[in-house]
Image (cartoon, rainbow, N blue to C red; front, side, top):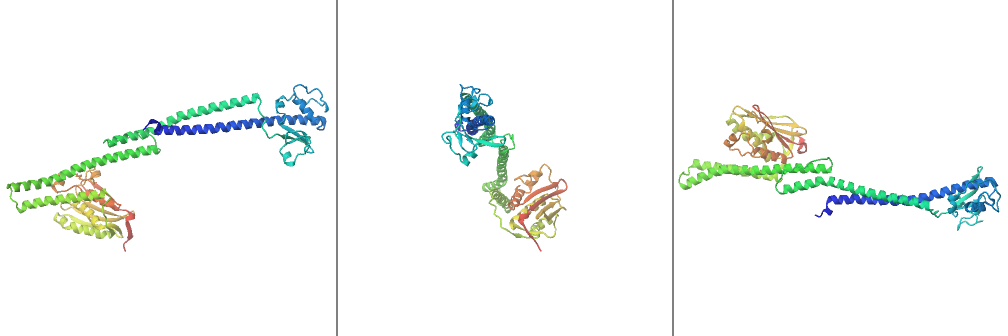
Length: 477
């Protein structure tokens, strides 16, 4: 993908676009506001100066007679104010020459107390016109000794700027232009830095994903923040570890399945080949050995099929309302003879008021059967296996406790792994496939439950199953 279309450039352009838009809006707003404020300031300043002169004139003359000539003379450059002008009485010197408003002579008009225009404001207010109340209210009253003696009318058009004011406004606009350019430049630099900061972890994730696609499944990208990008990196790392673990498990399972199949097939092939060559006679004992190995293969294939269905979420459950004591009694009856032959006591311990549960009866018996069968393998003669059931957290806890040698702490976390055997030699002697606990875990989890192993070396092992509250229904009567 071209670099100009990369996420970094898109982010940079986004920051830059925002900065340019804001800078232009601010510049235009300030420029228009400056012009308006400057015009307003000029008008207010000129009106204030005019009001002062009019008050001084009225105080000196007691009327507005000759005021127009006075203002014309004050605005002129040739006639000094100290020289009396024809048409009005000379009064005290009205102040310095107001040259600051000589260029705005048409901005103001004057209305006397009788609402008659005595200084015109063309074209709307010629001399002698009577001014309405609305127009008078918009003017600025002239007060002398607390009495309103006239009103100054102000033109609605802008006063225009003299060269000094125009130069000031031009310098202001240039400063705005430089500030806007500086803001855009800063936005570009900051946008580049932020874009690089935001896209750096994304590039790391992309590279790690490419490496995973190339076969390097376990990848680790640095997590440098706790925001959404940090959460994404942490989730990717977790996913990578899980994918690598699953791949290792798959490879290990493939090797374990090959090993498990090789042993019975080797036995069967050896007997069949010897019988075919005439080296061995097909006696009932030898055929029984071959049949036993075939049964072992069938059991292994069935277990693998159950696990594959559980992995795919296709393990079918025929859930129904079950009484917990009946399930435990059924499991006890199935293994009671085998336990008696080994001199092991198989007992029940159940608390009262157990709720019924929604579960697949055959699958739950299969789980208990796997746990009891495993306990029988490792419990010595005169030992004891206890099937228990009790209320826990609104659900039901089922336990299978034995008095066997126990499981070493280093082996305990792995007992539910497929084909895992803590005592490999003894397991092979008993024809164990290594899938019983894995199948039990898969079935329990399909019932939204949990299973765990607790053990103390030399004292025995307890397998605990919990069916959560949302699987438990009303208490039995």
